[in-house]
Length: 217
Image (cartoon, rainbow, N blue to C red; front, side, top):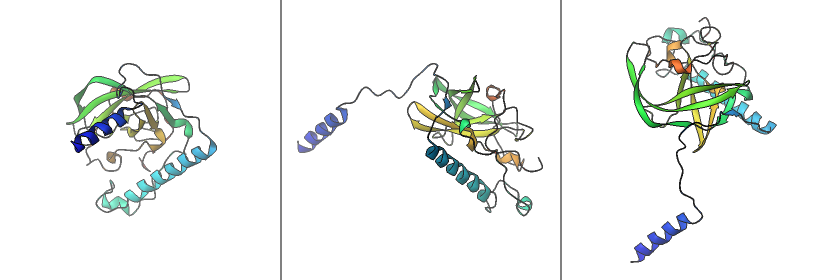
């Protein structure tokens, strides 16, 4: 009896002051926009970007984990990144696709990989609204994965496109930070198998943020 009373009390306490949980918001959402922030916060974002950049450079020299083939590690001089820009960090909601469906995403070896086609993330850049399709990998369902191309692809950035992830701040608030956009491993070694960006994620402008093409590519 005592145990039942404790369970009932906990349930009543948890419900106090709570509204019905709303985990999904289906249908169109407002485009994400750059988040205004004080100088100290922007400085923190820049520091996080620098840590991200340094982690990639360390990865390239780690035996067994590097996307670089061994013969290229000896001459590796660092990955090129665009300078950090707070204007390429967008905050907004994610339009969930209902129902989400498993799709076969083409890869660089002419085969396919299973992904959950989960949602769309609209964002506004310089007065233009673009929308990116968001997948969740079957092997990493916790990720909000975006493969994209833009008008820098094949020039300043890798021709096969780049990847970026949404970070969830809460149920209806996500961050898309292009400063963290990165190359697939295929950019350094074509023996890797990498998913290709869907046609829907070909952005009609230059994303001058994140990782650039490998030196000499």
